[in-house]
Amino acid sequence: MLDCMATRAISPLNVVLMVCLITFWGSSFVVVKTVLGEGLTPIAIATFRFLTAGGLFAIALLLNKSRKDDYTLLIEGRDFPKLVFLALTGVTFFFVAQYTGIQMASASIAAILVCLLSPILISLFSTRIFNEQLISKNLLGIGIAAVGTFVVIAGGALSVHGSSSFLIGSSILLFTPLMWASYSLMGKRIMEKYDPFLVVAYVNILGGLFLIPFSLAQNSFREVFTLSINEWSAILYLAFTCSLLGYFIWFRVMKQVKASLTSSFMFGEPLITVLLASIFVGEGNEITPFTVLGALLIFVGVYLVSRR
Image 1 (tube, rainbow, N blue to C red):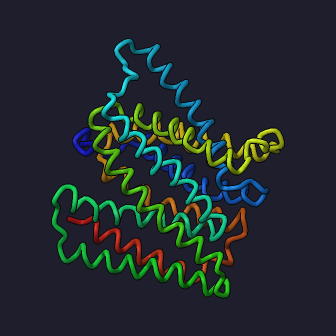
Image 2 (image 1 turned 90 degrees about the horizontal axis):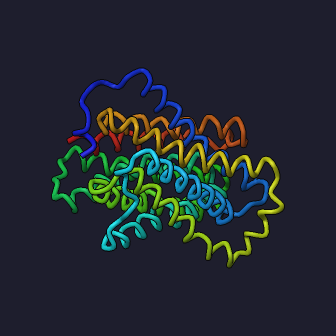
């Protein structure tokens, strides 16, 4: 549906916006790694981020409503379970798993697995949902990507001398592209019915609310009053820049440019993460030849799978 929105080439402004976007999203892995190093737990970071982001999205929706009298904030009751599913797979469980994986493995590994494996799984699920056929080139791509994933994880484990923490963290991270693929395909259907920004706003709001029980069980809210300036800055950066501003840029560009062209920018996100992680959180030594080889294999796999 989004591919039909526009056919013209991407403008210089939209190129700049997309570069800013992948920088925001690529840097988020490193920001989270930094805050984890200061003592916050994955659940606490996710909760504080999305409760803040939910508030920002709520304000944005009210501003949209005040500017456009015909802008509706209502969702049909029968679609509410779908929003709950999107909130759980796209926010609550997704980011708890991602942040736990970043803590136990690394920001770079998280970016490589999440950003590059998600398109593979989306293509696979699409064959089941939309009855699309995979040709031999696509199947070859899936195989190459699977080998690349093994190389990234096995090579990383060897580089840290068989660390069980790395293996567990990487295994947890493997669930994140699965959840993101489920979120993306379900989201595609519901966004054909409603304003995409409205859907994303509800997903962020609900996702933040669903994180509250986990934080209460962990007693994370007591940390709100002891957060340092750096920690609050990180939470606000994730909530405003990566959530609210990030999705605003994404849908603004998607309305003007083909989805396939817009999505191609996302392949640069892991590179940004790896570079920033090397500079700011000292992950340079963890980027081994195995990591580079595995990432390249996954990238080739994504390319072959995405070609029809």
